[in-house]
Image (cartoon, rainbow, N blue to C red; front, side, top):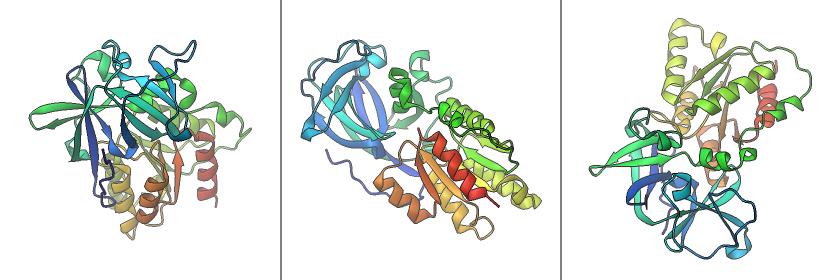
Length: 298
């Protein structure tokens, strides 16, 4: 299946690939998907996590296969179905699913946060829900699924320790990150690195509202001298936030760091076209601090 549907930059839209597991509809951002292939036998890995089916090598690239049914506590996938091969956080991973339905283009504003809508099991690994064609599609948090299997793929707070002793900084930084866990980890990491003047928001819309309020109050420089944003967020994504900030003469000179698991070559081109100053893949928390140092040095 061709997953390369092109989107204009900064439109606050995404494409969701709908797939089926155990008769239920789930979704993944097409930006994470490299290709979809028919299931093929894998080589089991001794002492691996129960959700890891094994490894295989299409076109000489080693890929780990994950049983998504097992992750969702819905049994195990049979030796059939499809592999959705993904790339995020600089990892190539295949997710085993029953079937693929198709691709839907939606606005981030139409994605419902899953707080009290889905079961406890899925709530922890769901980033949002789409109502499409009279059915609900649960968008799964694939980063969390992978980091639950292997915590080494997540943010490495120990990277901050390697930076050594650091002076405190009052440079005001605005953060837009919808994951509660990652939001806290980023804030904790920056505080540990000496950055104390932080405003953290849950999505691009909240961050943009902060910017607009500061503009009205005449306090923009006091509260926002650097912006760190994820890409995938409800209401307003990071690309839309970047576009709005860089098109406004009052805010265009504020450095923006896109900090996302989706930073690949294609996404970098989009971010550059929108005016992002720096784009980093999410595990690189040590590099994030170094980049902030460079961008905010007076």
